[in-house]
Length: 181
Image (cartoon, rainbow, N blue to C red; front, side, top):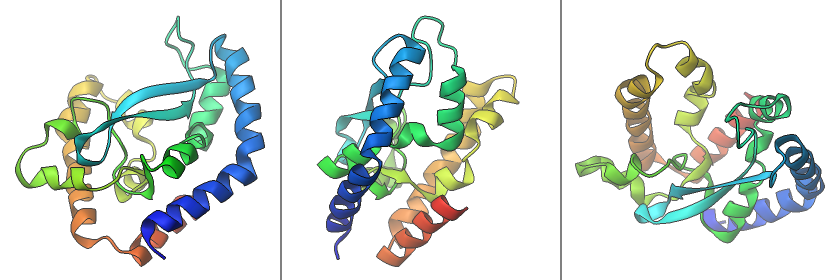
């Protein structure tokens, strides 16, 4: 089974199985944030092409503070469920480098740009390593600098290792570790 067929089949199955949950969480997030419960943001995709990622909204748009429901959604990673749609339509894959905002992957140079040949993923070795990224960033004086000088370069290294060594069985292993820890 090719990676794309795997992505289509399991994202469609996932949408069928948890679509009702996404709908309920969207309604709750809409009430909670007093806005559309979906968070839609431009991210950098395969070959540097921008796309719109879909997540459940976890912050109040006016205060930019994470809500109680939003905290639960982030900690449980349920805010990521709508990305099954991104996988289904082909913007993302289950496994690959997590898509980042403009100003990161699109600015890579040299060999590091090979990462852009990969379709962004819902999970990756880097996202497994930095599953608690928000906690790490909250513990430092300058989160942006720490991200730019420490976290992001390490993610690039991990994603480049994935580029050179990825396989279907390796992807299944990453999915297993994502689900079962």
